[in-house]
Image (cartoon, rainbow, N blue to C red; front, side, top):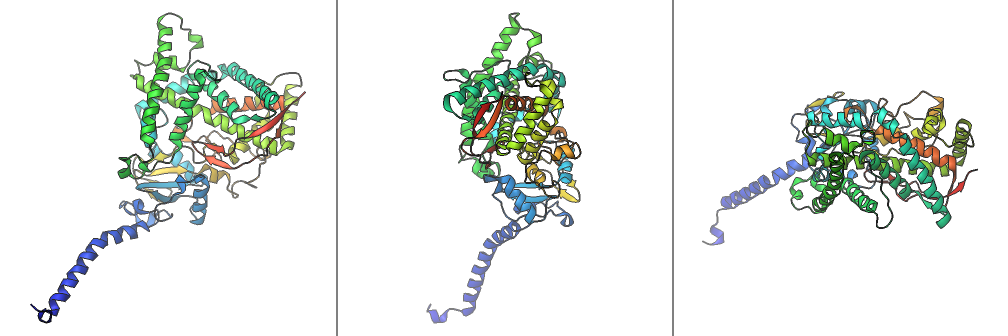
Length: 512
């Protein structure tokens, strides 16, 4: 058939069919693109249960703020730009998020039974934390762990009984800092504080003190802890894009599995030592530790060895970094504000006397020292996003805003504590704000400053952590005058906690 005999209608029909097929192929992509541009991104647009009148404002598409170095600042800026401090919706991959940057909505989230669970990251699951208190689903098992820790580790009676241990560790820190100053003419404070905090929790939980010099078992422990911190802190795209989880592109799963093998060996050896001590008659209930508590209740509470390992392993993480990181921020502020340092040292002298060593009984009288700690918790909250988020276990509302089940809820405590409408001169270090005005609690009842969270998932070890911080700070300030060595850089780095990007290096001078 010659080209001149081809029916033009057939040509039109063929082209029309081709365009139709092309349109049908492109239509799903066009729809997905339009949904992607919806407030909060694709996962929010696909949430058909969300009533149109209660849509939460937020950026479209997938945001990358959580994968950056300072997500708390990036999210605070986004919330401000969308005028959504009360509540903002956003998405990362297929994960639906809300974030509060306001005390009222923060209280609704943290004290709401609808947010009783935590989303379990791949790293947390692989490191067995889904069997520990931090990530265990709300229920009988979680309540058992909470009750055992509250009664036998974090009770006021137990914390008070450990005052001698805290005093001893603080005194050892003073000696170590003095020795480092004599030997090197400067002190890198981070490592000193880290080992002190690690030993404090190990003595409380495991009943064992570690040496961190070359060839000692403390170095093995420290390597396990550091690797665990890094794995829990890393932003893992597999948590938000399940399809790529099969490939483990970032190597998180592989590293976690290698680490947990080492953790099993390390912790099982300690459990074995405790069991032998209990069976051979050398166990002394007066000097019992938390391992003894778990072994005592193991049968009664139906705890497996894997459960005990998970609980003990998590205790190390929850109890170490907050204390060390907070103290480093405080000492940096003392160096930058020598007039405040002198004022608190004078308070210690007036209360304690010039010839006496500060003790835990003096702390309630050291009001300015307490205000310094509160102000540092405000300016440099260790968990600016309250470390671990919450998960909506069923459909709920925050104010008039509908939140579907499965949504991850976060609180930007850093944004709240830096809000000028809440805190006057929010960017300035002013401990006096807690001396002149109302008494503000940091324990979770006042959501203007709740660095340890609030509600049923509040940090259970907050009282123990603050006991360490108050006493050790008083000991360090009583003994030394703190001065800059290489300048003080307040740049931040958010890993599991909000750390100083560059470790504090300083000089100390013995105080007479």
